[in-house]
Length: 353
Image 1 (cartoon, rainbow, N blue to C red):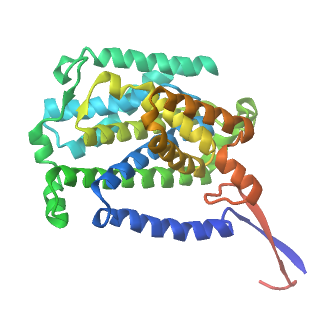
Image 2: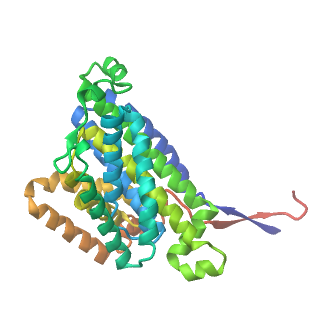
Image 3: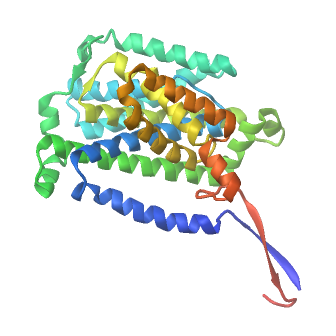
């Protein structure tokens, strides 16, 4: 008898999770047929926050780049969309891609300066750059300056696919826009998770993990650490910009303080990733659900709401350093998105094959 070994990533749980994910995706696509407008708006919030959390997790959890300035790319993406629509007459749906492109362009000089900083200095540096971006946009009078502006009614009225959705669901234009925004958010969240999972399963994913764990050791085995950090930073900025543009397309109004809010677009995102489980794809999914429940239960408590969130975050870091999903995975061995490569042995008789 001989033992043959094969390299695999799949686990029994991942196969079941794939089927469950497909069923869930069908249900989410069909949600507007049976869900209320309020539920659609809640799902939009969950999906956009999940997208932001996955990109921050890619940056910090897999790339080791802890940024507290992601609101810069949300804001720049959103303002790029508004500028394209108001000044250029671009269709708002097409302008979402411009939002991602603007964030990508901004990320290049940001990375050039921020990568010269390390640890806490890197984190503070990204926040400072975000504040500079906020103050600069506040001087842009064509899009409302410091007080902000709204999307033109004509642009919203002529939004692509809205009339089709109106006739399909027999709803008002505002509700149709919410459904369209929800479907776009769903597509972006699915593409984000699938893309990150694909990346982590490739050789670049292994290189990224090596850079995160020990940059010098990664360099010693031929990994281009600098290139990997650039790829992760630019990818995260592009995706965050897309999400920012989509969020403010749905809101239909923008201001510098809202678009560049460190609380809404970075602090909450970090909370989601930390309590869910940093460095895992499952963590932000679990974290955003916990965050939404907490927000629904505690939002009426004013400043106590933020204090309670902080206490919960501290408790999770103390008693479950790897987050809630890390705790679940550690005790059950469950992995819905496995990325670790394993050797699986199978016995066969000599002369076979």
